[in-house]
Length: 101
Image (tube, rainbow, N blue to C red; front, top):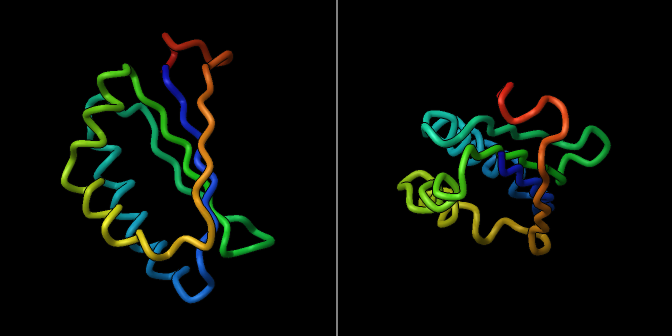
């Protein structure tokens, strides 16, 4: 599995629009065959901070996700909403093992 953690900081006036766009993107992303998981969370202490946990079955699934219409729409919609650039970190699964996904 290929696990991506994205930290996101949004401008305060964009929080609701960002939430709506990202919920739609996540809903469509979870329908992709190569996506094992696509979680969207909001920080309880600072509502302008969000995170994405994206779990892909293969490297090809990562590339396929970036080619989808819903991802392109999300990027276009949220492009001006960021208070600072997103940060990304890649992880590998320890437990559960990849076979359990």
